[in-house]
Length: 354
Image (tube, rainbow, N blue to C red; front, side):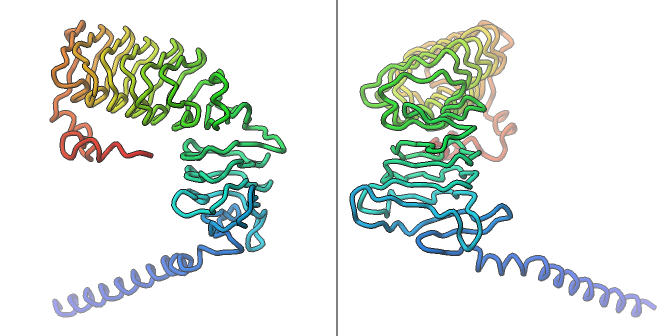
């Protein structure tokens, strides 16, 4: 009887394994086949086909060697309408045409992926369609081109060198020509949006009174920028917003309830004023500082101070005796997957240029 049960069990196990193997083949065979043929090429464009249409993912960086060449993106590829531009699709930083050019996108394209035009530094003009609905933050890093909408656009405007998402009132990008104008009255500054507006003569910025939020890397790598005046309307500042700027003093208005982790890494801070109203200060918020920050007063409203929020040797005056200073053990428990690079590996591992 035991032998029969054992044989049935063994047989059942073999059948089960074969069924699982067959199921895996059925599930993954189409994926494997698709992976071999997913990227297609036509002319100087490489693309993939999605359920929405064709998405351009690369081009061969070839243009006629003439002054003011123009690259026209085709409206269809493989007979399928082009609907999107993928990440890094028009990078010319490392290998590109020897001449500058204008880039013309056709009507019908509805979205850009983040970084779609990253490093398209040879383009002088990027012409976008009226059908475009989505432009993520960081789509134009290392780009200086003028952005135009020859047929208009219901969602975006490009005036005086400022590209703005009108739905969220977010400044997405500034071209070189924007430097002749003050910042427009927007609510949000997108990541890297001021790269062309700030030049080496810009040592002080007074932000618009309408501003409510600053994304990561907005003031990244501006060591000559000494002062940024935040309006009282400010509500949100994202981590790394001031990373590697030359800001030497900052006044955080009461409307900023939370100072995020790594917000002021590698600044030159000598003075930090935290207003009554701020409740939370993230880990390493001011820690790696090149200035001589000696004293900081925490108002009564501050309830939590993350691990290593301030530089070593900085004298912290606390008005609220119940303000909690996070220990290393607490930080590692709160973030077990290792954002504590500052402890284990050094902050350079975390702070990579976008």
